[in-house]
Amino acid sequence: MGVKAYAAKSAKGKLEPIEYEPGPLGPDEVEVKVSHCGVCHSDIAMIDNDWGWSKYPLVPGHEVVGTVSALGAEVGDKVKASQRVGVGWFAGSCQRCEWCFRGRENLCAKGRGTIIGRPGGWAESVRCHWKFAVPLPESLPSEDAGPLMCAGSTVFTPMVVYGVAPWMKTAVLGVGGLGHLAVQFLAKMGCEVTAISSSHDKDADVRRLGATRFIATKGGNEVKKAAGSFDFILSTVSADVPWADYVAALRPQGRLVICGLPESDIRFPVVPLLAERSVSGGSSGSPSDTARMLAFAARTGVKPMTEQFALQDVNAALDHVRSGKVRFRAVLAVP
Image (spheres, one colour):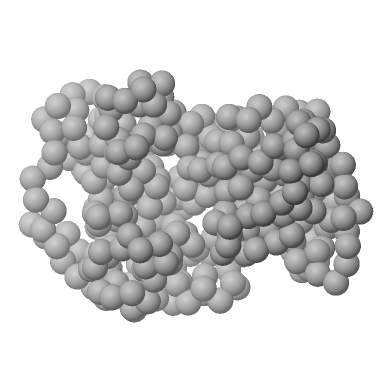
């Protein structure tokens, strides 16, 4: 039986209903009946072929929530039928390399993206390796869990990997789908949090989410004035910014983590790094990282601010996200 989905048939194209044959279920795979799926900027990048990886027709969707509807022959009792799970950016890995053995499958050189060369979650169902179908806490609503599977994991994982601690003075650059979750996670960890955005139009929102300070970058030099202020800065922006100013904003031994994908290569002077400042990358986490994030979110009340759309209204949802008007994450409900 074919799977009904929405797909882009060319770069930057409108999404259209399609039906595809998924083929036999792999022995280590599970099939997930989708109930909700987030709309991520990475979905848009794949639709538009911004990274040169896209193959059409392309079914986007990698912030998936649903229930396990079929189990491969070798899955056994590792995942249970009808269990509610989430699937994020990764759908599988080699399970043989040192990174997979360490539980850092997100660093596997043979990692398989949920929407790279395979159909994603803007569909009736999606498939992944059983380990990447992460069980959801019972108290976490499905419509909230979707954006956590990518956006939440992407900002939470580097906080853990790089040792964010409650005493730290932290900042989040960019207040959007990723940034508004990062503010919440850092605040719930007990950190002092500064939100940094181009203007003050999101000031009230992020203060409600836990930020204690807001810096607006447009038309001022507030970032320069914040030199030597932060132990940890998480950047979620996709635009080019004066990176040297953000390195200078770090305290000695402070760290700037890049989670967004800027338009150009990053340049900054080396001298500030001699005070043991560092610049690092961050990405969506492994299944165990994501499970830890979900448990933390459920326990502390971290949740995305979302706007809901029916799957058949996916093009309206995409237009809303592209316009920058969404506050702060769009979620599709799949009938």
